[in-house]
Length: 589
Image (tube, rainbow, N blue to C red; front, side, top):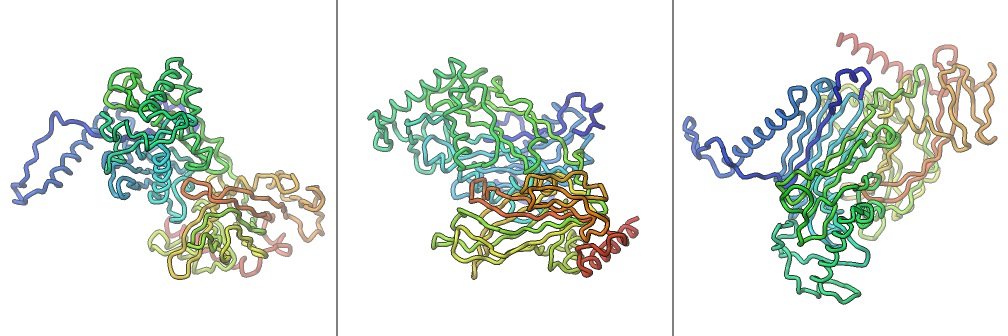
């Protein structure tokens, strides 16, 4: 929250996101809709009528929420997919600072077509802070196969519901400063050694009914494997009693230890690097439609309804959870809703790394990956690396032409063209590639690098005759790299000092002041080791390692022209760019 807006907050939230699943209701009153438009004499189809009814429902829901929140809020997103809905509201005081809103989604129901399961994504950008809200409804039922289906649902949502303007290689969990993932995730309580697999009526594998009619009879013992020799009915009943005993004793911590979702995150099966807070409240499923927590006997009480969150590299300290609780007074579902409150420090209030009047060089070398996912039928991949970055980061690379820069920075907003990114050569048939002797050099000049400046290294599988496949992505925060310790343990000190120093990498990080005759006067150098996981669709996809040589050169006016490490071509190119920007600014003014 901005300090200048503190006096105007009155303890209200700046952003409110509401996700709904199975959001249907019985109509008591509805404006009459005829199947014939009398003025146009057009016969309306059943679908037309249903769409018109739904629009009325959406309007009524919007009006209801608006009346609850008051005139101080305005809605910026309202999306529906089947019975899933996602609404986002913001305080009017900050709405003028919402610079963009993107909406996407994915269906994961039968055949990945039906919208009874899936997710909706809303991504908004508040000044320089990108926030994403993902409301989901995942596959139902207990058992290992349904657990895997839920993990696959998450991967599909992240793969398909993308809002990043940079590249389709980046899913919403990578391209957001902070992301919130919530909804009826359907992960169940799974007691160790007690394996019960629901056997579902064909065609109902994504439906969890109140009357248990979607489950084949309890005498099908052949569908389970239990060392005690218990039948399915007895084993299921014992699990329900065991869960209820934890609830009766208010031992929520003891019950939470058997939560499928946190086990899946820890195992790398889904939502890697996301945080799920402990559920210090009774399970929200499966309950009677009454106040409080009265559990039905068809299912093991479980924490199916959740809120998770994740921050980009270098921004974890900017997000703080305030509360996380269930809503026991809600009585119109066999789930109890949950709500969470969070505080976020916007990126623009965090001091940037100041490179005003300076040149920055980033040289990536000793590039290697280990344990990549196979992308080809032979169980191997042909991987190469692509370096991408957000628009908040003004980087250049060797081989970038003036034409590239003009097209991407000036006309890119008007003409959709594929952007050119620096990349390595591919290496054939390996899951542990090493790019020997390869270096990727990036540079920036006269800028300020904020906490939102992200650099992404995409691992891609080369295919000769089809489109190349993504394997994974590594996310790096450039400001974090600049402020991190070097390989010898040294840190940058005050880089705004014009008499900056050199770091002697061979001497344990010792510093020596540059003398006036030193050819490297005004230059600071360090090396940072990178060892980060490769992530793909919320799962671990390998490990990435490299070294980065970071060099900051002092003021680039005539006093340092003789010692500048930049080539004349680069200096000329940057000068032309500055002139073009100045001319464009003059035109705008």
